[in-house]
Length: 298
Length: 298
Image (cartoon, rainbow over all chains, first blue to last red; front, top):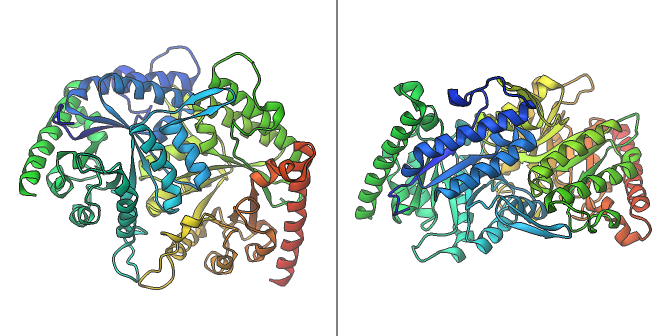
């Protein structure tokens, strides 16, 4: 992160109906899912090429690959491998959560792998995975165990960026505070054994950039957790409001943006790659400067 | 359901390390993931063949297919299609939940499909999908919309069967009642426009069979919701305790069992297929008799 001076995460949410024009269709032969997956790979590679210098990671939205079926799952692996060749971390954004035996299977799919009588099966090898905490600690722990064994990390949904976050996450508990603060305490507890040399844990939190009023409290409750901060750009969040995320240091926050980078040319004009590069670089500069000030103040 | 006189759902959670012996390995050529996926298909087909007469649906645990990568996603489609040829409903158990644009992509992957410049992409075509409500109604609604458009349904996690359910789902709210009851109210509201001729809605609930003390209250809060009842068998739940689920009629509850059917031979001895058939048939009889009594009493 320091080498690149970036906390920006390129969100890859490819929609086969809205790829950059050079990948958007045409009359090539083959089944639709394979053609769509091939186009998605081309689009993602071009987007990564354009923005890699300004970014520290890519975030793969698993839903967008799954809708392409088996070809999409293959594309997911291809895009992750490509990002890695450029030195980017890979965040698998699947928001999984299940009973322990199934959570273990998800962790095998996304982080580690599994030995079988047919030979070893490699997972996606993600550096970070997003996890849904509704079902409680035993739904999260298999991910933490798998991640800890491979030097990866887990990002637990604490307070998300969508309007629906108010429905359950924001409900006030009898013992005080909203539901999401209780999740934050879970995250803090699960992460304590995984705090590394830089003071940051291997269990982090997803905290939406659309409700920055919660960031300070989230930081109080999870002093060592890296924060993944979605919602900047298309969802209305602003980098300038994210200072509390960086209190433990510049690595304390990862600012993720998808449509505001990939679709920058739709508002700024110009070539998609140049517009995406400029958008990512602008985010990088803003966040890096802000996080420097936060650190000095903390 | 009435034709088969069954409310039993065969849970398919294939573990390549614990398939029925005839599918468990050997020296066939090919990459490990393809061989494992092929064995998983064989195992699932045999399990479906053995138990189809006693069951009304299969529940595919997506995690178990995803850990086989692209081959696993392909196996998922193959197994779902096979179950359909025997007249079984298909439940895609992925417990997805995400911001609306991503939830829509998941729904395209699992329920509907999507028109693209490359041609139409077909989803898995599931009859029911499990959904995680932590992120609120806007994370659930895209699934409801997609399901309603295709005659499918949604099963929202309300009170799950794992011990960790106590961590978040059972927290008491300031305004009274636990978090899961608030989720139940969401489910009831989302389902009201989708109540069909039999009085059941297209938005149902996952209510663990391991905590039957919650079933009666869940039924009060969600009068028209079909309940998916996991946790029978390996997790400790008993069919005999599930009567309140069937208050609106025999279709009010779906009893899902995975390991207690697939691994029945490990406790009863005999051939895996015969043991699985007997286990499924025993569950079917117990649930059918119980639901007849519940209906008469209601």
